[in-house]
Image (cartoon, rainbow, N blue to C red):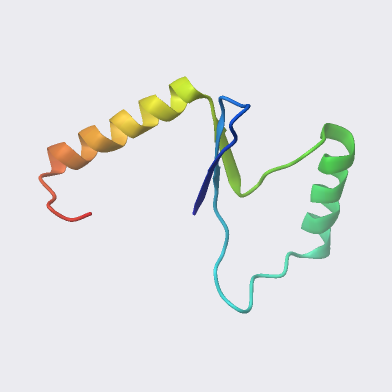
Amino acid sequence: MLVTKFDDEEEMYFSYWRQGINPIKLPWRMRLKLCWMVLTKGNVYDDQVVLSKKKAMELALWIQDEHDSSGSSTG
C-alpha cells in the first residue's frame, strides 16, 4: 500500500497493487474495457482510493475505534 499526499492538494491517495514477480495478466477483454474507460472517462484507478481530507480523517478515526474496541495489542 502506498499513501500519497501532495502539498497543493487536500486529497490523499491510497494505492494498492499486487506484489510479486509474476503479476496477474488481465484477459484481453478486461484490458480493452480499461482502455475504453480511460479514453472515454479519463484516468481509471482500479488500484487506488482517493479521499478528501475529511474522509481520510473519518476513515482514520473509524480504524482507530475498531482497533481500540477489538482489544488488540498488535500493530
